[in-house]
Amino acid sequence: MQLKIIAAIVLAAGLLLVTGCGSGVKSAETSPPEDFNFILKYGVGAKNVLDTFAGTFTKDLVNTGTVTTGLTLTPQEMAAVYAEMRRLNIFAYPEEFAPRQKGLDQVYISPHPTYYLKVQMDGKVKEICWEDTAGEQNLSAQPQEAVQLRNLIDNIVRMIEAKEEFKQLPKPEGGYA
Image (tube, rainbow, N blue to C red; front, side, top):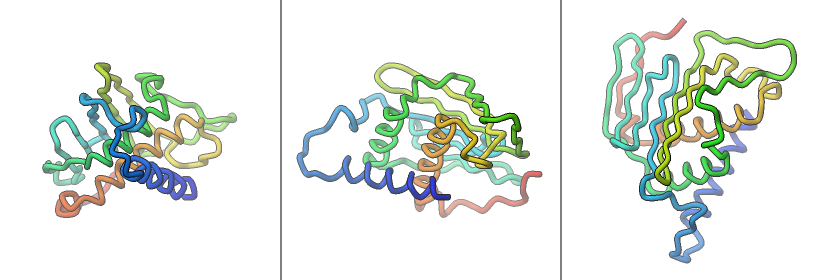
Protein backbone atom coordinates (compact mmCIF):
# COMPACT_ATOMS: atom_id res chain seq x y z
CA MET A 1 0.00 0.00 0.00
CA GLN A 2 2.81 2.41 0.90
CA LEU A 3 4.52 1.67 -2.43
CA LYS A 4 1.31 2.61 -4.28
CA ILE A 5 1.14 5.91 -2.42
CA ILE A 6 4.80 6.63 -3.15
CA ALA A 7 4.29 5.69 -6.81
CA ALA A 8 1.30 8.05 -7.04
CA ILE A 9 3.37 10.88 -5.53
CA VAL A 10 6.23 10.21 -7.95
CA LEU A 11 3.79 10.15 -10.88
CA ALA A 12 2.18 13.42 -9.72
CA ALA A 13 5.61 15.04 -9.37
CA GLY A 14 6.52 13.80 -12.84
CA LEU A 15 3.32 15.29 -14.24
CA LEU A 16 4.16 18.62 -12.61
CA LEU A 17 7.63 18.54 -14.14
CA VAL A 18 6.23 17.64 -17.55
CA THR A 19 3.42 20.21 -17.52
CA GLY A 20 4.89 22.89 -15.28
CA CYS A 21 7.97 25.07 -15.40
CA GLY A 22 6.44 27.30 -18.10
CA SER A 23 9.49 27.23 -20.37
CA GLY A 24 7.54 26.09 -23.39
CA VAL A 25 10.55 24.02 -24.46
CA LYS A 26 10.07 20.29 -24.76
CA SER A 27 12.64 18.14 -23.03
CA ALA A 28 13.88 15.04 -24.85
CA GLU A 29 13.83 13.28 -21.47
CA THR A 30 10.09 13.73 -20.91
CA SER A 31 8.57 14.47 -24.30
CA PRO A 32 7.48 11.32 -26.06
CA PRO A 33 8.60 10.84 -29.65
CA GLU A 34 5.94 11.22 -32.36
CA ASP A 35 5.60 7.44 -32.71
CA PHE A 36 5.10 6.74 -28.97
CA ASN A 37 2.09 4.52 -28.33
CA PHE A 38 1.38 1.43 -26.33
CA ILE A 39 -1.10 -1.35 -25.71
CA LEU A 40 -1.60 -2.49 -22.13
CA LYS A 41 -3.62 -5.62 -21.46
CA TYR A 42 -4.22 -6.49 -17.81
CA GLY A 43 -6.35 -8.43 -15.35
CA VAL A 44 -7.37 -12.06 -15.25
CA GLY A 45 -6.74 -13.32 -18.76
CA ALA A 46 -5.51 -9.82 -19.73
CA LYS A 47 -9.00 -8.93 -21.00
CA ASN A 48 -8.85 -5.23 -20.04
CA VAL A 49 -7.10 -3.41 -22.90
CA LEU A 50 -5.93 0.17 -23.31
CA ASP A 51 -4.84 0.75 -26.91
CA THR A 52 -3.34 4.21 -27.40
CA PHE A 53 -2.73 3.42 -31.09
CA ALA A 54 -6.49 3.17 -31.66
CA GLY A 55 -7.65 5.41 -28.79
CA THR A 56 -9.79 2.68 -27.27
CA PHE A 57 -10.32 0.84 -24.00
CA THR A 58 -11.87 -2.59 -23.64
CA LYS A 59 -13.26 -3.57 -20.24
CA ASP A 60 -13.65 -7.14 -19.01
CA LEU A 61 -17.22 -7.61 -17.77
CA VAL A 62 -16.40 -11.15 -16.57
CA ASN A 63 -19.65 -13.13 -17.09
CA THR A 64 -21.06 -10.83 -19.79
CA GLY A 65 -18.06 -10.51 -22.11
CA THR A 66 -16.29 -7.25 -22.87
CA VAL A 67 -17.23 -3.73 -23.90
CA THR A 68 -15.08 -1.27 -25.88
CA THR A 69 -15.20 2.52 -25.84
CA GLY A 70 -13.12 5.40 -27.12
CA LEU A 71 -10.58 6.48 -24.50
CA THR A 72 -7.39 8.48 -24.85
CA LEU A 73 -4.77 9.65 -22.42
CA THR A 74 -3.94 13.35 -22.34
CA PRO A 75 -0.59 14.51 -23.73
CA GLN A 76 0.54 15.06 -20.13
CA GLU A 77 -0.45 11.52 -19.14
CA MET A 78 1.32 10.09 -22.20
CA ALA A 79 4.42 12.12 -21.32
CA ALA A 80 4.33 10.81 -17.73
CA VAL A 81 4.01 7.19 -18.95
CA TYR A 82 6.82 7.74 -21.45
CA ALA A 83 9.09 9.25 -18.79
CA GLU A 84 8.43 6.33 -16.44
CA MET A 85 9.07 3.77 -19.19
CA ARG A 86 12.39 5.47 -19.97
CA ARG A 87 13.28 5.54 -16.26
CA LEU A 88 12.57 1.78 -16.03
CA ASN A 89 14.49 1.11 -19.26
CA ILE A 90 11.45 -0.78 -20.51
CA PHE A 91 13.32 -2.10 -23.56
CA ALA A 92 15.66 -4.02 -21.24
CA TYR A 93 12.82 -6.19 -19.88
CA PRO A 94 12.64 -9.69 -21.34
CA GLU A 95 9.75 -10.53 -23.66
CA GLU A 96 8.62 -13.29 -21.28
CA PHE A 97 8.95 -11.64 -17.88
CA ALA A 98 9.01 -14.26 -15.12
CA PRO A 99 10.61 -12.77 -12.00
CA ARG A 100 11.51 -15.15 -9.18
CA GLN A 101 10.84 -14.22 -5.60
CA LYS A 102 13.80 -14.03 -3.26
CA GLY A 103 14.07 -16.95 -0.90
CA LEU A 104 12.94 -20.53 -1.17
CA ASP A 105 9.16 -20.21 -0.92
CA GLN A 106 7.31 -19.12 -4.02
CA VAL A 107 3.84 -17.67 -3.51
CA TYR A 108 1.28 -18.41 -6.22
CA ILE A 109 -2.11 -16.77 -6.45
CA SER A 110 -5.05 -17.93 -8.52
CA PRO A 111 -6.68 -16.44 -10.37
CA HIS A 112 -3.80 -14.10 -11.10
CA PRO A 113 -3.38 -11.05 -13.29
CA THR A 114 -1.74 -11.36 -16.66
CA TYR A 115 -0.07 -8.37 -18.25
CA TYR A 116 0.84 -7.71 -21.85
CA LEU A 117 2.60 -4.50 -22.80
CA LYS A 118 3.47 -3.49 -26.34
CA VAL A 119 5.45 -0.26 -26.56
CA GLN A 120 6.41 1.63 -29.69
CA MET A 121 8.89 4.48 -29.53
CA ASP A 122 11.77 5.80 -31.59
CA GLY A 123 11.02 3.34 -34.39
CA LYS A 124 11.38 0.34 -32.05
CA VAL A 125 8.74 -2.03 -30.67
CA LYS A 126 8.93 -3.95 -27.41
CA GLU A 127 6.50 -6.59 -26.17
CA ILE A 128 6.41 -7.92 -22.61
CA CYS A 129 4.19 -10.73 -21.29
CA TRP A 130 3.90 -11.43 -17.56
CA GLU A 131 1.84 -14.03 -15.72
CA ASP A 132 1.91 -12.36 -12.29
CA THR A 133 1.38 -15.45 -10.16
CA ALA A 134 2.91 -13.73 -7.11
CA GLY A 135 0.68 -10.66 -7.29
CA GLU A 136 1.26 -8.07 -4.60
CA GLN A 137 1.87 -10.69 -1.93
CA ASN A 138 5.11 -10.26 0.00
CA LEU A 139 6.43 -7.31 -2.00
CA SER A 140 9.74 -7.35 -0.12
CA ALA A 141 10.54 -10.76 -1.63
CA GLN A 142 9.95 -9.61 -5.20
CA PRO A 143 12.67 -8.32 -7.51
CA GLN A 144 12.73 -4.55 -7.99
CA GLU A 145 11.96 -4.95 -11.70
CA ALA A 146 8.64 -6.65 -10.85
CA VAL A 147 7.67 -4.00 -8.29
CA GLN A 148 8.55 -1.18 -10.70
CA LEU A 149 6.67 -2.71 -13.64
CA ARG A 150 3.61 -3.36 -11.47
CA ASN A 151 3.74 0.28 -10.26
CA LEU A 152 3.86 1.53 -13.86
CA ILE A 153 0.87 -0.64 -14.75
CA ASP A 154 -1.02 0.44 -11.61
CA ASN A 155 -0.41 4.10 -12.47
CA ILE A 156 -1.74 3.60 -16.01
CA VAL A 157 -4.79 1.76 -14.64
CA ARG A 158 -5.46 4.67 -12.26
CA MET A 159 -5.33 7.06 -15.24
CA ILE A 160 -7.84 4.87 -17.10
CA GLU A 161 -10.19 4.53 -14.14
CA ALA A 162 -10.21 8.31 -13.58
CA LYS A 163 -11.59 8.90 -17.09
CA GLU A 164 -15.28 9.70 -17.55
CA GLU A 165 -15.41 7.21 -20.45
CA PHE A 166 -14.36 4.42 -18.07
CA LYS A 167 -16.81 5.47 -15.35
CA GLN A 168 -19.71 5.24 -17.81
CA LEU A 169 -18.96 1.60 -18.70
CA PRO A 170 -21.09 -1.16 -17.15
CA LYS A 171 -19.91 -2.90 -13.99
CA PRO A 172 -18.54 -6.44 -14.28
CA GLU A 173 -20.95 -9.23 -13.39
CA GLY A 174 -19.66 -12.23 -11.48
CA GLY A 175 -16.06 -12.90 -10.64
CA TYR A 176 -13.13 -15.22 -11.18
CA ALA A 177 -12.43 -18.19 -8.97
